[in-house]
Image (cartoon, rainbow, N blue to C red):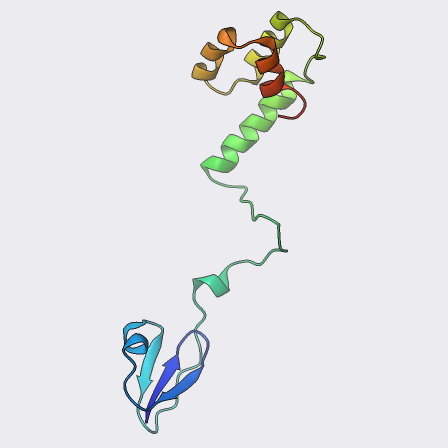
Amino acid sequence: MIRYHNTNTGDIVEREKADARLDMLPNWERLDRDETPEPPTPDSVLKRPQASPGTALTSTEGPRAAAEEEFKEQTEEAGKPPSKSASKETWAEYAHKRAVSDQEREEIPGLTKEMLVAKYGEGS
């Protein structure tokens, strides 16, 4: 009888013959007949902070967080979008305030008013 120990969970299983799959996996080890296994050591998944289902973990550090903060500030500075009945020029001015890159600013003159409203309106 061959005994295997899972180092992540502490599970012990017995097999009549050697199990090639368990021999291959790094978290399984063979035990000698009288050997007592070490206590389990959780893998990185078990060490991750837990959140409620459907809640994304967000970091307040790093390049993505900095970009999101910059976008939020830029959106606040631009103010509320104009009414849908405002002129295309008004929407273009608002779009320039909200644009996040030079490439995006270059595209604004080629957009129709409807496209500007869809891209920079309330739902964006």
